[in-house]
Image 1 (cartoon, helix red, strand yellow):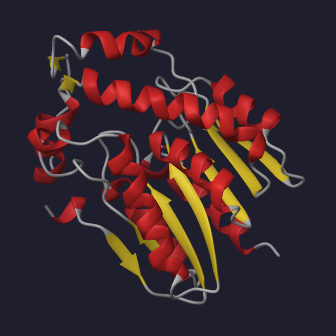
Image 2 (image 1 turned 45 degrees about the vertical axis):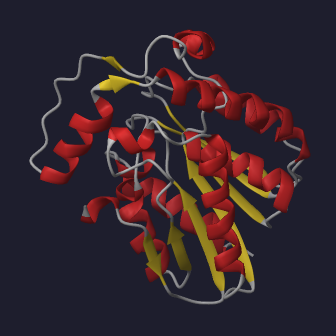
Length: 245
């Protein structure tokens, strides 16, 4: 589907890797990617394996596949850009934290990074995964866009115990690695986020080792900050962070 295809926009010598979230796809970064490119940046939004295709594909993937794709996209950007920055949304923010601890990019942005989540049942996901591949959940959302309606039917209408267990492992790894991060870091959170508590952003902000750090809380947005009601303001803040010398 067009909305799930990877995005690559060639710009200047500075590249930005944008990493989408759990059951998401590059469509969540369409607006931000285009605005970053208009600001002169080269932008890559990879599609993480098992995402944006079908639920059957999703069940075949693990955190190692998701991490590898993000690292590969980073190295591809590094091959054509003098400098590469990283930003991630939700699980993508968790992946961005892990990568930043390892790769030491000059600049990092996290958007509702899921180092912690409201739903404590995620700790039980490894046990549930032994009995269920997926579990139906209530989702009455309807979309005019047929691609989004397809993604809702394939991904957002189910809970995925095995994949949630993989996410939980990523969350724990990211929490351990946060103190290793020295990148200039912008931590972005949403007041109305029903998935990731504000305490997750506070945890990142307080525990990173970055000399330059900033935390922004948007009052009207929900979890998908890059594609919600304040996406223009969120994107402006991200561009300013990346372009500030």
